[in-house]
Image 1: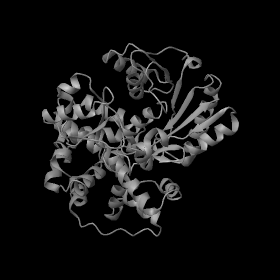
Image 2: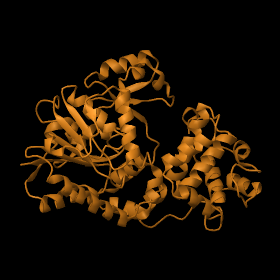
Image 3: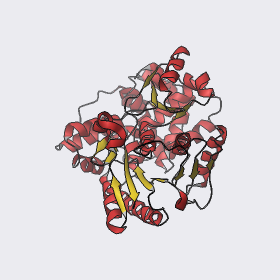
Length: 446
């Protein structure tokens, strides 16, 4: 692993990473666990914080492979009773296998009295984990299980994806989800990407445009200098996944623009798509946003305030009967976002995916009666599974009359549609679209 991407390892940074991973194992979301650990670890430098964040994500991302290595060395997780001890073994193996670090480098970070307590294993066992020859583990019989092991995914999920994609594409998807994602931005206002890229280059930031999305750019260096640039301080850049930008594009009319329209963002979350839609409708239009999470909606309000977007409001209930476009970025399994939230793959089950389907379908049914005739209902997820995508649309159309599917390919044009579209839908696969997998369908009410 490149040093500039790794950040700066230290005992205090390792302590924060181990504490965060422990919290994840006890049920906390990774983002919250990391935020709390960094808050508790006062005084960490920027490079140390980067190391902590990467280490936490990597221990969840490669959990299956790290545990396999531990078993191969004779230290299976079940034999190591305490979660604190399991976490230490995972950390040492990650530093060894993915960072190429020797025990001499690792030991100052983990040696007794130790970064986490309680602890039952001694330094000599951790030294063995770091230095003992690692035999080749047995090779699984099935191709899907081999890929699940190599890229650290649960068998049930890889087996399901294997039913949908040939093995080369399946491996490309898993490989993309197994990488720490790059930092992507949306350029504001739309259509000024070339100018913003040129200005970032002048300020010494390595950046490149992303071809599949009209306003997306990728920062190609590990440094976070972009946040200190004049372009960023002027509000010309918004952190946003490429797939999220494509979902906002899916809300545009086939002809003309969204300028002056009323758009409702029903599951707005922290407001990423809300801000992008506000730029689309302009000051002559209006965006109304809502979410079941008060905390996340408070974040959306604050972000809109920071950008002085006075045409964004958060009424309750949302006036859906007036909206020209209703975006439903539905709660989902997040299987398309596992590169960013790798802890979720160990929490998901096939049963929970079916539960998401039922919730998503019920949400669309609830909204359908409130949408005015002629309005566009855009259904979106960050899932790779048809149970949450195609099947929800199919079941919705079967239960609720008066809606038709509008193909998305004409909106994206032939070149981009060849990469982005599957039948009438947007289906952004992680191997083809940087930053994660997303789905969208356009449903027009007659």
